Length: 529
Image (tube, rainbow, N blue to C red; front, side, top):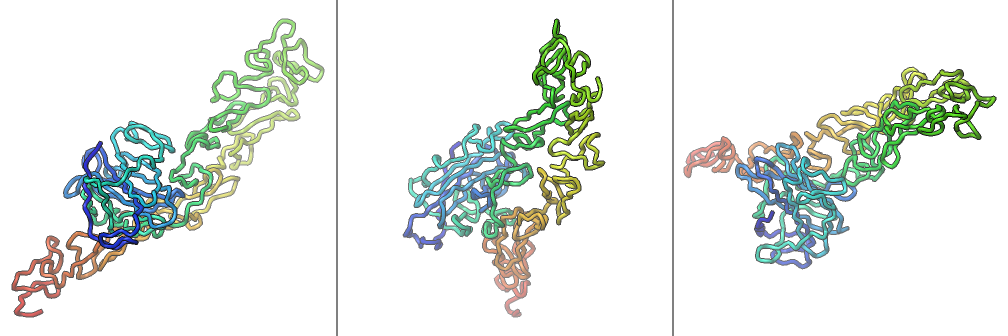
């Protein structure tokens, strides 16, 4: 989908080496242009762009309403200005949402090219909605097809309609290695602001991004452990609870077997002298290889002069008679001291219990818990191992090892390590479990909505964070009468005739030519103030 994009030339501001109308050094910029074939505001009502470093820290997250009222439609742009340091790569994620729920998402990994102004188009199309196209964590959906994240080869020169370059010189967010425009811009180049939406968060976002992400192995815990800006992704998880992918659990309570995860696939390990002959791992290893119908292997039947199944040179084979050390039990030659199907006597089989493996030793059934489980309730493995020490916060990694209660959170056990699940509205911004979920991102102006967003200070106003969105309230006697959040509460409603007492249209009066505004009330000039 192609649309003409017109760029308005903003007022001349001093930024780095740029003075009015003159560039002494070529600017290094990336302009992200977001478009969509979805109707606004009926199908989508907001677009957002987040810019992240490869280590997972968020540099900026900008959003803007689209369609409806006086909001202009798509496309929207976010400009990144490189001011020093590495050229990349950066991760850019564009989203279109409706009523706060994501409708379609696209990601890209791009890098600056020194001295060049380049543009990346990110078109959020209906064909890429999750219900229509699901891509792997290493891919993104472009024009209805899964594609690689690397998009440097799709960067094009940033050109106006006449073929020339136009500079952006708006106020920008100061973050190490790159600068991002404070607000999303519409197709005419005008900054958009919803006065309390995420646009207000842009001016200072990135200045307090919290501790850097330290890469570790990705596990299923709701966190970005490997710092690739994806959560709980991967195909090599190797626990029986999360084999290959998060939530893919291998079967438990198997007959004569235990589950193992090998290279992301569930497999089973059979007990001695048993095998899975039906090809279904769910019941386990159901076949007794000492049986004359499956002697030593599946479907090996004994008969004729060798009707029994017994050991011959350490291998189960069809034999004519049992040796002196073996006992004949149901046409099988067995050692009742070690055979789990005839433990101590013919027919006395050791019965598998929940999450256990069982062997026969000295004619006694011996039970042991399979990996990740223990008998924490009664200490008796013979009646099953009921406790999952990988997930039980009261017995995390071992019986009796309880995870602590921390602030604004619930304890949880993830792969045998204590972790926390934050209460609604709270976040663990310092990545320190001991402090719990210390930040209320619904109200904290330094971490508003997410840990990375710091709400900007506005002139003659008190900064606020409500419901995870930045905003501000004017101090007494001041008003935001031009509805421009960038200049705060610019109007003195105690003395301004056009906005006397409050902004016009918000309860304020407009004084006549014979009146002045005196302490917020219109008063005849002849009477003085």
